[in-house]
Each structure stands twice: as structure tokens, then as C-alpha cells.
Amino acid sequence: MDKMWSGRFSAGASNLLDQFNASIMYDRKLYREDIEGSLAHASMLAKQGILTTEELREIVDGLNQVRNEIESGEFEWKISDEDLHMGIEKRLTAIIGDTGKKLHTARSRNDQVAVDFRRYVLRKNLEIVDALKLLMNEVVVVADLHTETLIPGMTHLQHAQPINFAFHLGAYLSMFKRDIARFEDSYKRNNISPLGCAALAGTPHNVDREMTADILGFDSVSVNCLDTVSDRDFALEILFNISTMMMHISRLSEELVMWSSYEFGFVELSDEYSTGSSIMPQKKNPDVPELLRGKTGRVYGSLMGLLTVMKGLPLAYNKDTQEDKEGVFDAVETAEISLEILKEAIKTMEVKAKNMESACAIGHLSATDLADYLVEKCAIPFREAHFITGRAVAKGEELNVDLSKMEYKYLKEIDERINEDVMEFLGLRHSMNARTSEGGTASIRTKEQLEYFKKYLQGAK
Ligand code: ARG
Image (cartoon, protein in one colour):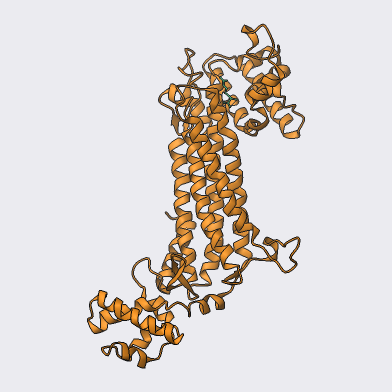
């Protein structure tokens, strides 16, 4: 009967219930946030005359000792304490005596856990932003070297138009920049203090919520206590933000997997970030991007899990909500290691520019350029130009030559309005560099895009 809430009970909890009910084995991760929250709360209680200065001092010293014990590994985490809030408060009271029992005045575990978990999530939003920027920096370094490297641009995974490799990487830079904006928005939107909401309805004690919000780095105080103690939108947001980021990472990973195959041969992942096969001695497997692709599924699972936990919950706090943490911890840790390892894999991979360029010589990548030529130079309507180009492609297939290498005489045979200057238009590099519209692949445009990302990474918006 050593439970903090045991007053109204006559029999102790079963071991089975302890196991089932406890969150302490995972919410202990929030110990720093919990102790900081308690320190802020105690300072406020003292300022409001609810605790004496002497009591505050005892509580502060006691909490600091608890923190030291946790950090040195001395602290005993017990399932029977149920959660970290009670584990820490119990230890505080064991150290400083009855004054420890005053700390929970004007507070409930409901606002306490909302403070701890929200602050953890807020911090992680910002840490992930930093990690994303480091990854983007590495992508920019590779992109900078390849603004002239041709690679087949694809739609439907079929060769479509020649682009350059930096432009291709720039697409991922755009995605990562949007991801960052999402993490930053979530941080701003959710930086609101739950402390002082107590169990659900606020407290009759004369608390100063502004003061604790300020100490804990929140921008403001929440408006409605009933909402605040049951709101887990901030957790759903980080799960969605991570899911979307992982979706982007999985797309890049899929390309890395393909590109490192013999069939593509566009990149070779470094030995450090590749693995071997236990049976086939020749194998060098792209486990890193494969795992990144796979872990994306697991992160989606956490998002779906929490959405489902929250669905239909009546107001306000319900124990179901305790299921909010493990999925978030797992997703956050997955995001952190994923960003780190993807950055290293990109930094150390070899880009096989020659193979990228030779791949462009298959698939008639400059077909659209021939159609554009017919429109521009021969005043042929685009639909007709499209048809004529189709015939040129068919001829190429018949002769087994790529359009970019087809002899002029065959083109003239197809449509006699075609002049010799067409040959320039069919060159692959010309094709890439012709796409000078804003955001296009032309090397000069790609360089502008890289400048934009570099400026952004240096702190401009
Ligand atoms: N361990 C709980 C959780 O993570 C803390 C809040 C418990 N509140 C309560 N009234 N049982 O949600």
C-alpha cells in the first residue's frame, strides 16, 4: 500500500496491474523535463506565498539531488511507482521529508505530463530541423559538383527528358526545406504552457501561469484547461512531420537502391555504408537506403496508432492517452538516426557521372526538343509536331539509334520542313540547357536554385 493515491483503497494493487498500468519504464526519458517543470512550479508557488522560501530551497536541493541520482544511474526506477512523476516525487519526499509532499499543490499529473511531453516534442521539432539542415548541406555539396552532369529525367520510371544531377538533387532539397517549415510551424503553434491546468478545470490556488510558462520557455499560457490536459495534437503533428519527412527520405532511398544496381550504376555507396551477403561473396548491398525505406513504414504505424488512440476520446484526460509516448519516442529516434546515416551515406557515395551521361543516350530523351523545334522554327502546330516526332522516334527504333544521334537525312525524309539546324536541338546537353524557364533544369537555373538553398541554409528565409 505504498501508492501515492492509496488513500481510498483497502487492498494493494496486483503485480499484474502494476505491470499493465505503468509507464515508468519508458516515460523516464522525460526526467529532465519533469524536474525542470517541478522546479518552475515550486518557484511559482513560493512567489505566490504558497511555499515558504525555506521550503522552496529544500525542494530545489532535493530535486537537484534526484536529477544527479538519475544521471549517475543510482536512481531506482520501480514499476510500482507507476510513472516518472510519482517516482521522482516519492524519491524527493524520501530525501527531504514532508516538504516534498507540498510540491504537488495546484498541480496534477495531467498537466504535469502535458508539460513534460509537450516540451520534449517541442525540443525534438527543433533538433530535427538542425539535423535536416546538416543533411541538406551535404546534398548541396554533392549537387554543386554536378550542375553539368546529365542524367535521364524520368516520368513513369521511363526516360523522359535530360536533366542534370544537381537539379535532381534539388528536388529533394525542396522537399527537405518544406519538412523543416512543418517542424518549425508545429513548434510555434504548440509552444503553449499547460502548467496550472491541474487535473482538468484549473485550480483554486492563486497560481501564476505566466511565470511558469516564462521559466519553461513557453510563448504563452493555454486558453482552456479542459482542452489542454487532453490535447495531444502536438504529438500527432510531430508524427505527421516525421512521417512526411521519412516519405521523402524513402523516395530518395529508393532511388539510391536503384542507382546502385548494376542496371543503373549511377552511384556506388561507400564500403562503410554498405553490407555484404552471408552467402554470396560478390554482393554489396544497399542496406542503408533499404532500411530507411522500411523504417518509413514503422513511423507511419506510430502516426496511425496515436490517431486511433485519440479517436473518440471523451474529455478530458483518459488513461488511453498514456499510449501517446512510445510511438513518438520511437519515431523521433528513427528520424534522428535516419537523418544522420543518410547524410553520411550521401557524403561518402561515389557519383558515377559517366554512367549517368551514357544512360541519357538511350530512350530518345530529346524527342520533346524535336517537337519544340518544329513548333518554333517550322511554325507547325504542337499536336502535328508531336506526331511527326513520333515518326522520327519510330525510325530511330527501326535503325536502333537514339534520336540525339540520328542522321539528318532520315529526319528530312520524315518531314521536309526540317532543316539542318535541327541537329543542334537534338543534342542532349542542348536539350537540358534549353529549359531555362524559372525552376527549370538548365545549368544556369540549377545553379540559381542551389544558391537559393545555400542562402536559406546560411540563415536567410
Ligand atoms: N503516466 C500518465 C500518462 O503518461 C501520467 C498522467 C496520469 N494521470 C492520471 N490521472 N492517471 O499519461
